[in-house]
Length: 186
Image (spheres, one colour):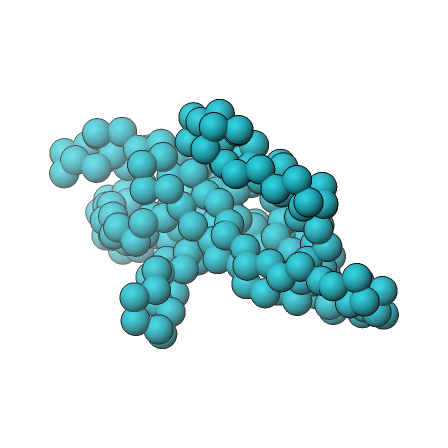
């Protein structure tokens, strides 16, 4: 969960899905995940993709996925689009990429790497993860977080109130809004 009112960016074309906030997506994906920038060249492995699809759909690779014997084991492609998604059931994050195979001549052409290649992941520096419990979301319970996380991630409490408190509004991966009352105890 990210504390922000801009959890999603709405794309302008009607009928398209909402795009996840990049910072939130990277926080969920983890520090070892980075996405190539649009315009870069990537290597696509069709067999690996087929195996991944088969594993994620619990199907045999040969049973449902067609076999293309003339397809090379890897294709050099140009990346045209990257869209970040999250599974509604599991919150697993994944990226959908639009690739265009390059012709043999295009592969030989001089290629300048995009300037942003090698830039660090957009993972936030101050965040924490917590699996919500029933008491976190009830009106009688409290949203318990480690003190260090509260001091680093949340806005400062209003100490003119007794007890010091504030309302936090967070959006999750699916654009659901969650409201919490953040108070200081002890």
